[in-house]
Image 1 (tube, rainbow, N blue to C red):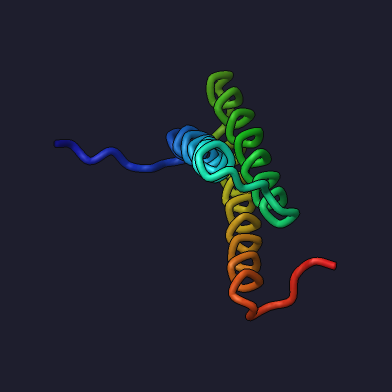
Image 2 (cartoon, rainbow, N blue to C red):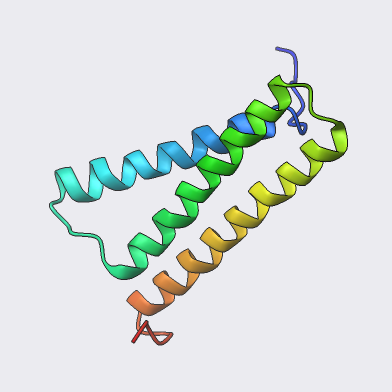
Length: 105
């Protein structure tokens, strides 16, 4: 099997699929199957994934329209920042659930 590099052209599609899958899993598993209502911090994490989906979709459209490599690099950096925000929020959320960090007021 040939290795396919994860470059600035493929990365937005992978990011879009990953965030959409996480959003669908959060809804499908936690809300629909387990009947758990999302808390405030859950919504914050979802907002970060919604932002990732939007930025990734814009990057995909830019790529289709022939965006320069520099513009695609900046789009990938923006996608990475949205993932970093989601990681920060997820870590804070987990630490709050384990009573190791203060939660939102």
